[in-house]
Length: 68
Image 1 (cartoon, rainbow, N blue to C red):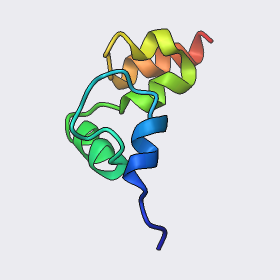
Image 2: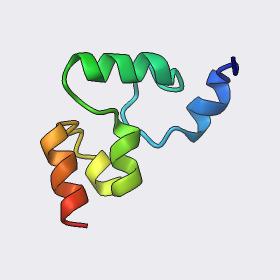
Image 3: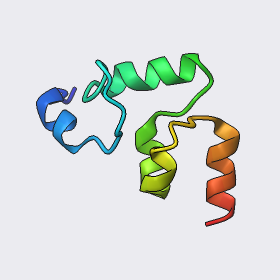
Image 4: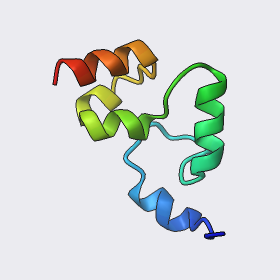
């Protein structure tokens, strides 16, 4: 199993929200999926501006993908 380098991940994480889960991808994904959301890094891959809205909704993500 590959080790998770949280310090390196924290530095490269594209999410602009200051969270205690930053750099802890497994925790972040688990948290957002439990709330029926996607993590910010997914939105940042589409648009940095979209990530900054803090809208983590699946429908919003689908809208961004379909209209890109």
